[in-house]
Length: 123
Image (cartoon, rainbow, N blue to C red; front, side, top):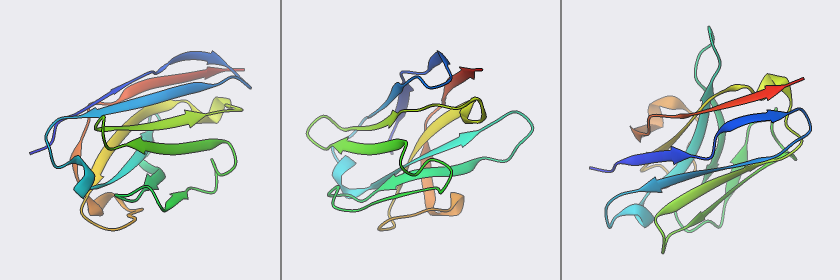
């Protein structure tokens, strides 16, 4: 079993930046692809970004492409999401998750989830 803990959320003005971190327990971190999702109030959880096990491949939702950057450090059992040029519509709880699929983009492909970290972008 993998335990995930997100951090780095907060309140930021539009145009600002935040860097989210996700720390994973266990020695099998490098076996998993990692993803970030977000859920705004009253909306379904949506895909944001994913990174393959070796970090060779990444993918992004169109809404964040060019503004967000996903990365990982397998030696530290961590995955990151650098968020730049933030917009009010980026406001949501952000979750990291693990997957055994190569570069997953759908909820059903992920198995372990963190508790989430709140990101609020003011206009």
